[in-house]
Image (tube, rainbow, N blue to C red; front, side, top):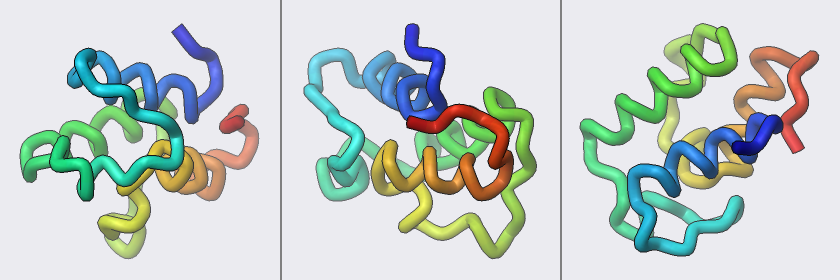
Length: 84
């Protein structure tokens, strides 16, 4: 399991969709992997795993399209975490 935020996010997504080859820059919404339930699971995963609260203004689809975008969000909310 990865120790960086980006790696943990990718591990979570790949765990849900093990048949898919997803990298950090692929748009998981465009690939069709995300429905409304999984979108909420992503939000809860990020909040719980990285011990952050995502403010309403950050609950935008662009912050959750890719592992890069989600790790950027985590970096803004918890700058002391390793996100690479």
